[in-house]
Image 1 (cartoon, rainbow, N blue to C red):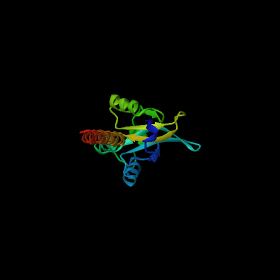
Image 2: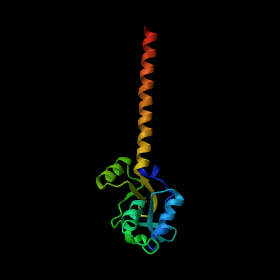
Image 3: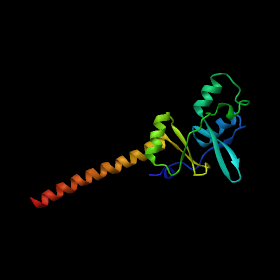
Image 4: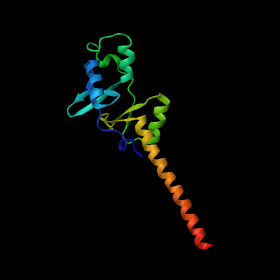
Length: 152
């Protein structure tokens, strides 16, 4: 399954010069744990980083820094890892595991922002697939029992 089919396309974004306090307010307003840092081109957004609620807690609050002064570019992860929307779910899961990332920014072939996928999104999809598989196994067992009764 291509990751583009399960990623959230409603991504909370902010420019590099956005202060941490505004980023935190965006997270609260949209009920998310991250803000994707973008460079805006004409009608397209190029992701350049990501700031999480944990980044804010560890890099700003814990150090007593002023969230109204510090910009998100100052605390965003330096090496943004992205995946393309045509990548298979299994490839994304493997990369998330290797890099110990709970969130992956999803782009198109040109590097433009498409969405974001989280470990929670992946778990939901996998749980649904497992449930469907379990239903199939249960249905198969019932069909076999019914067939045995008819043949008996």
